[in-house]
Image 1 (spheres, rainbow, N blue to C red):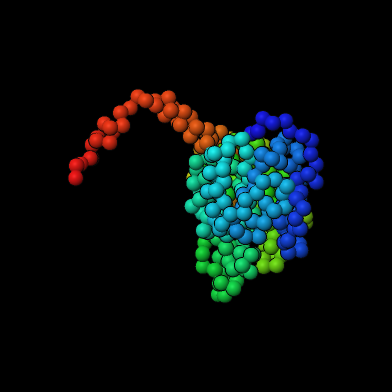
Image 2 (image 1 turned 135 degrees about the vertical axis):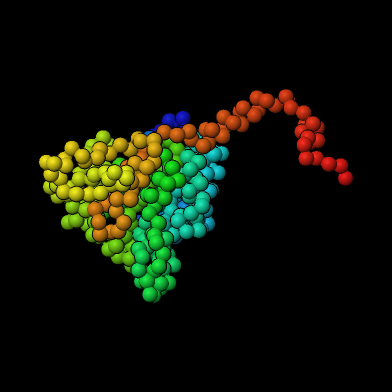
Amino acid sequence: MSTVEVPITTRKDWTSDQEVRWCPGCGDYSILAAMQALMPDLGINRESTVFVSGIGCAARFPYYMNTYGVHTIHGRAPAIATGLAMSRPDLNVFVITGDGDSLSIGGNHLIHALRRNVNITILLFNNQIYGLTKGQFSPTSEQGKVTKSSPLGSLDKPFDPVSLAIGAEASFVARTHDMDRAHMQETFRRAHEHKGSSLVEVYQNCNVFNDGTFEGITSKENRGSMLINLKHGAPVIFGGEQEFGVFRNADGSVFTDRISDSNRSAIITHDENVEDPAAAFAIARLTHSNREPTPMGVFRDVNRTEFGAATTAQIASAQALKGTGDLASLLRSNGSWTI
């Protein structure tokens, strides 16, 4: 974090002069508006803030933020952001990526940034389609998805970004959606404030190539019964009248059921600070389609040593030993030979 005094700003100060070029009605507009409105409340400087993106519709995001920005290459945003965060720990580094960019060609970079706990905030826009290249199925598209690249239906089992991030033991994992600005802003704020790797999956509508894919759970008429709002320390209940709860099976998996007097005491309480990722993973695996009640909010928030700080400490330790070794002896140690 920068120690420079932070001036009072408004949304306008964080909005660039570039014309926003997304398809009319795209969910990206809502995410951009939420982020621009949130930035003045984060207590950071524009000059110490960087947005890094890969390739895809979401990757235009840095152009519209009045900060530093880097539009990189396909899938490599986490790698470039890692180098930036490591070399400049005073910066606030955000990564903007999509489901195709981050989970296909960029999958390896993503999981290693998460497991290392690099101090970056990753916003993964998930519209379950390749939008920029005009509608091919993506790593998050459902099985059977008929597209230009899968005319008989996709055979691939899709990734679940939250499950993947928890499996990589990311220290902060959350989910939000583009139809609720307040929820997005609170989720983004918490992700930024977390020290270490943060990943937020954002359900985002592509109204051209995959319109309405999340409508069954995120539309105003369906949210009450289909969204499971995770709150730390609270029982996991949902429904228009809070009539459903989440319960745990003997094998550790979880399931939903109607609440009754006989099972009320068995409703699980959400604890996002549990060190073992199995608890958060079970919640993430609660739903397997866009037609089932779906958890939203923070799944996991744990403290782990941040990779940049650990690296800096290791370098300092090595520098303290400077002059105590014998280079000639090292060069002629085990495994050397004379030609």
